[in-house]
Length: 506
Image 1 (cartoon, one colour):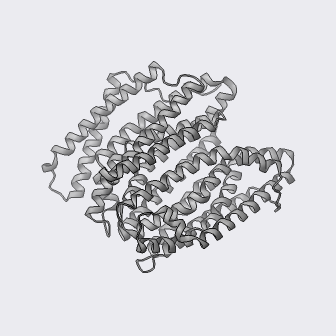
Image 2 (image 1 turned 135 degrees about the vertical axis):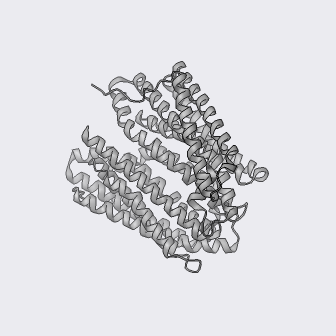
């Protein structure tokens, strides 16, 4: 139990530090390049190798542990050959993909930025020709990460995002408008550092490898079969992000960056809270399913959802109401001007409402995987993303970049709704009367919290005569404290069930 808590703490601390460094990265990028073609190209160059290979890497990581365990039980030599076969195959695949990209760079990057003119495309081509080599280190690092997690060693998982961001920060610091290609070198450096750390830790934990190439290996065949549904799910979500950014590029320079900054702020909350809850409860859900069946899983899933909604509602409201001071504090300096502040603040205030739905989706994806059901999440993802693309195309003309964010918000809600509906239909009814009443209480308390913060934000302007940023921060602290206090008080009066812990299994 002590080892489990230590592992959870390491992952949570690593995630938080990685997000803080990522935020510093975004702040430095905004300060130096604002919202323009260079920052847009940098962001898109991160997506290109991710879309091409990261989905495969994530799917491999999910299935590596059970298959390596089976191979190791057969013999240490079999496990070493399994590792060697994977490393050789994915090195060859990465090489082929990189060569194809280098040969057809311009037509490929046009898919990612259909609205870029020749100047924007030049930036993107030059940066992405460097970042594409990250593919080698992404896929190979995920194999080492899977091995370490199988051994119960989570330091590598914690270091992965930290070291990536360190490299990217160095790239931003040493780059300039004239030497913007250094941005790509920083990205490559980050992935190399993460790869080296995982390689060293794996070797210290007795990672063995016998290089070979065997396409008929039984474990490799099983890996392919298990990976396809997860890969399809990841791919459609990656495509969704590419389509959003590609549509954004048709509006004008800077809107990709503004949407990206808003996504990053919101995703910090989702990663720290929803991912942490998943990390703590996911093994418990698997154990419960194996020992007690679906009814017990439903009860614990119910509790997980209550916890995440209880946390995410006030986070959503705080970020939405105080979007401008948050963006001003984080980004408003250097090349990030008043126009950048306005469009990014609006993007954050709208996209914040996706926190609740994205958190629910994160929980339910893991629950379905625990039930060994990979098809349900994939189906819901395809339907939600198809809707997002259709709505983005429909909304971009009348509403501009705000239409793209609204489409994403609707898509997030649809995905969460479809997952709940699928669980109800295939297993048991997830939303019972007691759960629905608790959610209604949270929503009512949230409305009162929102009204409180809105009133304080609107009618206390003349009280503070300090500079604008300090004035906004003071109002946010007062409004957030008063709103949060009322949120808890209303829930207490309504007799909300504050029981947030799963009973310890006997």
